[in-house]
Structure formats: C-alpha cells, structure tokens
Length: 53
Image (cartoon, rainbow, N blue to C red):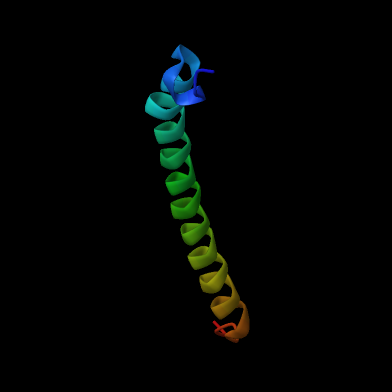
C-alpha cells in the first residue's frame, strides 16, 4: 500500500498546505501579541485619573 506522503495529494499537503498553515499560525500569533499589547495599554490608561483643564 502506498504511503500518504507518496501520493500526489500527500505531497501537496506536505509541500504546500503545511507551510501555509504554519505561516497562518505565525500571523495569528503576531496579531494576538499586538492585541494583548493594545489591551495592556488601554488598561494602563483606564487606571490613570483624568487631567482637569
């Protein structure tokens, strides 16, 4: 029996799909990090009293 990685679909999966999935996961991680930074900034600003004019 032929192994999955030896089939056309298997090669496509490992050569194209898996790298795309990895890139997408890296992008998601970067965006989550940015979101967390923004939330932390908002939380810091919410704790500061407003300046009277």
